[in-house]
Image (cartoon, rainbow, N blue to C red; front, side, top):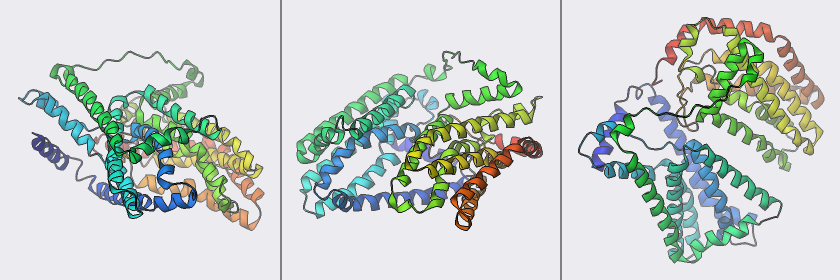
Length: 489
């Protein structure tokens, strides 16, 4: 039976109407996946030596065990966004003499060989091979790898149960932040507390039974859950949800533009892909710590311009580059109504402007590393407000690929075209180039002033620029509508 299921999935993949259209992108993604896989293998193979140099007085295996608790929690958190749960069209199968248990076993078995599970093995197996090379007991290392894979399967099956729960996401995220905070401030040495637990999986081979039993329990819980859901009448029944009474009444003060703001805010909050953009943007506030804490970047002033543009404009880039594809499911309906296109674009600009201001406010604590960092971030925020917002809206007129908001947000190339790659040049490359030239020819203060003045000029010309962009959208209107109607684009 499993062979037939695999055969059906194989035919569905090659007979899909989108197979030919997205073949080039699939090939590119395969090469990119192989490249990432090579990096993971390389890092896993050299992790032993890295840990020996960073912690010369400690056993590398002990050091790694102390961080495994963070690996488990972070992987659970990331899989919520990244992992696509394996699904198949079960409705035709439910009317056939096929056991529901067979369907459930196939879905769960297919998930166990997912890319994310295999990726962990490509990291830990090279590390384990190096351990054996350095004289670690083969039995202990082998059973440790079995324990790691059992933990990976536990994470995989737990993700099945919590993937649709935002509450679970918040709980996992909060646990990560709390544990890191306790460890950072010395209130609870998390690595010393959980390290012996994970190191025991290596030190005592018989403990391999614990993660294996947990993986089996997680599998059985998922199996029971799926089997109880596999009923034809249940799958045919329309899903009903309690309506949320979030009216966002405060948006009415913005007049006609308030209607579009209301739609955007509801779309961001209710859909996983758009909501992920918000979480990713907030996480990238800490991106500056990677560079500000390293002495090697102390004299690389253009790098700080990159950080300023990137951190204050992360939501601008992530969300703005897919305007108006976010509304592709009902864009044709909007264009057939008497809707002011200028107000539509103005609402997008206002939403992105708020994000730039918020991101700048969140980067203010970086003043701890010097007032020049705050000045660069301020100039970058002004540049994003005045120049990059009109640029991102203009490039949006070339978007013709539909976006399905129900699909996984990360690793999803839907809606991506050459526009998303070309937009990096004016949005990120141009301001860094301007800053670098004035910084080396004159001074840092002048470079910051130039970015600020360009942003203020762009903001002063806002109305004229929006009028020009509106005309561009009108000229591209029918091409965009035709593109958004192609569901397999």
